Length: 481
Image 1: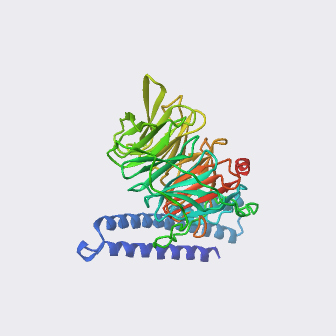
Image 2: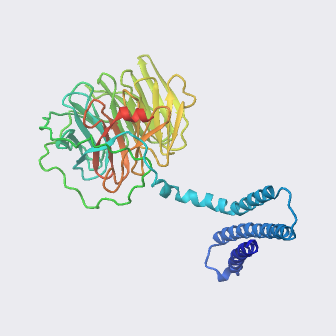
Image 3: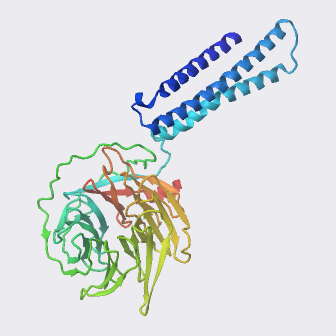
């Protein structure tokens, strides 16, 4: 029986060895007989050579093991006792197992790298956190770059779109309440005044507009039953199905506003973002002309031009309680501008990313969180700016991030249509459900928290022309942590 097994293994190895030799021979033909590029031929020859060497080593070891087995069988047939026979069998078994697994292990390592996503799709979800899609806000005719939630009553959701418009929505019903159509280019960001019913929008028409709005909230409709817990998905592969390319129909009964209260000019390029400084008396804009401008809201006069970035700006953000501004750029850095002392305007440069910094935002404390096209998110301490205190590594570029106020949960919108949640220490908490029926179907551009809202406490938007309201069970999220 042992002889038959050894013969079978030897024959199998011989077949593989013969096939690899045949492949080598076919690849060794003159270059003019081959249609393969030289670099590809070279790589294939090298790989087949490695496979041949591995099988050759296994074949030699197999022969040695076969001879040892035959010797033991002969001694046992003659009635001789073999001292330590059990130990010898164990040693032989271990040696054989080790030698035959070397090649398979190498092949498995290579194969596993390409199939890990497929395998992970079958993993059981252990998180008890609830991530429920509550409502979709549909009406824009092009991708949505940015969204924000108002800080005064009535609380509304604002979206900024490449279709040259900004829209205000009822969070509870998903109905469009007002459409602002005063820009001549893509609307790239929207932010609400801290105390008044005013919105600040930045546009590709090289301006930023401040406009007042008055809306009346409709009667709330019953929301989805979020008691039916849907665990946040961890590693479920998403569908490649995209929405139809046809234009979506906008809201037919949505009132329209076309005239801005104030227009902020002076940029020589696309205005990519804008935000209010604490108090709402000044506003800051970021542009592709590599500058950020600080304006007086009442007079629309330029107060300061913040220069220093080597490439186009991508985002700007203000501190919620202090006169601090952070600007992000394609030059792989973000800068902190300090206006707390009227006589001194200091600037600090944060370096650490290797690609475009897509956004940098303040937390309530002394931290800044930055996201980048280099697929990382970094958490920084304003008191120690030399290196980040935490780094989150992901598998896709990160767009405009947001951090919840109370629990400091970071929401990461990705190019690959995913939205992931992390804590400030870099621990992954959850991933929002995403499939061909649930979640975003194209790049997710922005996220925004609204923890005070009972139905939707997280909003996301993307280039599938929709914004989505989510209910995140934060206590369950942190308990699972």
